[in-house]
Length: 80
Image 1: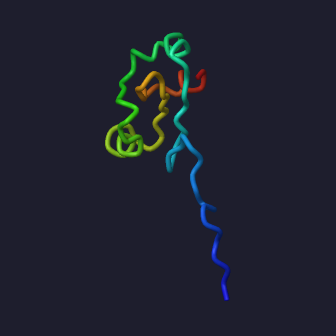
Image 2: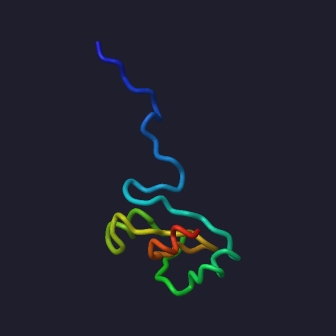
């Protein structure tokens, strides 16, 4: 008889996607310092998984700030 895995054993951590980099969250002040307004964005109520799948690619670096999710280059993502 094989054992069944415990429920929730494979649950993802909050704020991550299935593949690629996890979505980072920054304050509004830090978002201004990083100049996030320069980068493409979508509403935080939108589907992160869907936007990665259809537009940005699985390895997109996303930052959540002030109700929006921004697609930024890796150097900006690593500073956040």
